[in-house]
Image (cartoon, rainbow, N blue to C red; front, side, top):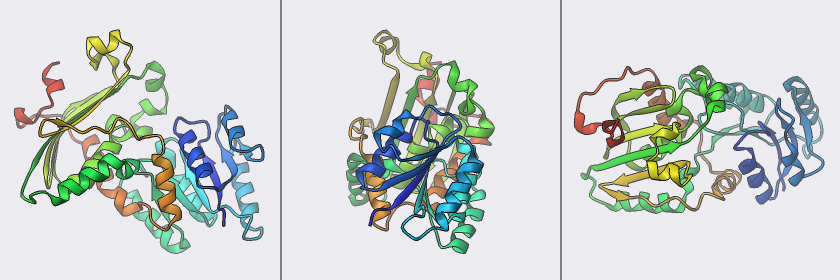
Length: 317
């Protein structure tokens, strides 16, 4: 039977991926919320989506649907809102008797997961996290290779991610650490979750650069040493890239060899949704390790203990 979805954050950057996933899995979008009304994209899904710019009216509508027959109620709430609102919106979903499908990070402070977990137990509903890199075909194959490799082997990883952002980014909620969690949380958590999933638990971490536009550091995992560099500053791109109007650089190397996963991103959210609808999906405990890590990074003062563990992009500065 088709499921009913509501979507929070309909005008946001990632919302189209969720809309596509809902549509591709044959389900119904019945309601949407955003304080911006630039949501014409909803027409590509259906002309019948109830849209609200005020949470109170959206809440009232969801409650009305909850009290209707079983076919009318909201089954899932897809959450694409700013990071600092995820907590409240997950609570809303559970309170109206729906499961939540939430973008990363689930929360900014990992201890808030415990209260959400308690609500799951009280309501019998579940929170799912969109950890789409875990379903990327290249990453799935890499995980199989690592698991089949010598268990004593420790890999050397370099993670480099530069995604150019203009002044708007830093004047929005994304540039406010109290709302986004900062660079490591907002744009790094995708990669940190993937690396922990591949190479095991965090044993140690240190931060080498901590600025509003960029961060860098070192992480020791069970089976890998990771030097990482994250930036939203286009001046960190090579001169050649800037000349060619290339705005993003993404690279992950393992023992000097590049992981090729630049393609295959188009349908990852759909794969995540299919897993959830089939009774699988990634929950609170899956999200906890990377949330613990980015919280630690956010609260660690910069300092270098081993120069060999500094990312080469930092050395060049």
